Length: 390
Ligand SMILES: [Zn+2]
Ligand SMILES: [Zn+2]
Image 1 (cartoon, rainbow, N blue to C red):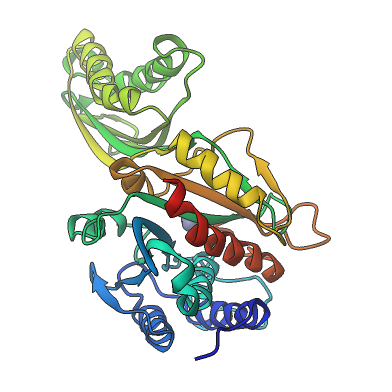
Image 2 (image 1 turned 180 degrees about the horizontal axis):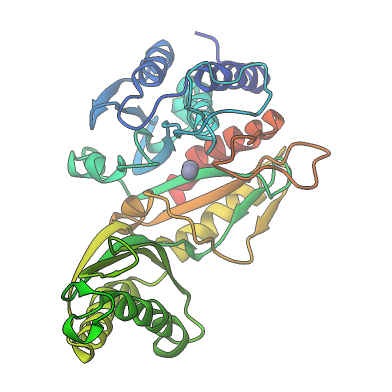
């Protein structure tokens, strides 16, 4: 088989991206997407296997033995109705690739197809991981539990996520915190109901909940080091039956986001202490439930510098920039980056001529397909150079 040139691969990538975009699939239902990935890996002569239902792993063994680099793409779409105006817009009602995972899958597949006939130049192994359900309930954790980091043992993991606010084709990197954790909580305040005209005979949960809403903000403003970041947002509050009845139960629901593993671990105890103290001060009780979501993505500093160095030496990229700050969104690549040195890169996909592009998860989200070749080139150069440097 003759080795495909870069321009041919770029055309394939755009074609795959459009095909995946037209028929977006939600988490753990990526059947057509997985089948496309398996078909193209097989055509390139790369053995692959299924992990975690719809996840696909391809393994390319290099010409010389060495370390193993995992390259990861996510495949799932969002329950968002598409209003991008693209000719290849979603034909599935209410489902859209609004986070660019169609592009991630196509770029990694492009890199695999380009690298396959050049395997003699690779020292070590490249594991291509096509992951389901990043948008929830999460595919990274079940893939790791199913052994995706073993046989051969993975030494480092790298992913690329598109970002509309970066210029098209630019690779953005950052050492240390990159994406926040995302955990949820519910606090139920329990009192005693009664007639609203006789509050002294009941225990009213509404004012207790109101006090709790403002007191919880003091975790961020008074308890946590001001140089650390933590967001605690209350998204729901529900209590009461009608205007003249004392509410015997009020529930507050919210989310907590931060970058530090230690701070994150301390948050349930802080919530329980404040909620318990305020409830008992007013003769009420409370139940706090805390639901762990994705951990923060913390890019390994040494790996990230190696990756950024390779990107800087890669021709044809739209530029390489150090990102000034992490983002508060969550990303389940965090599980890979907790288990092995990990690096999440960003790829600018701002459509040309647009000052205010639609953000990720927006029904209007569009990306500049010319940027995809930067992602493919970056994956390819990392595969050729990074394993020797690990
Ligand atoms: Zn997303
Ligand atoms: Zn995403």
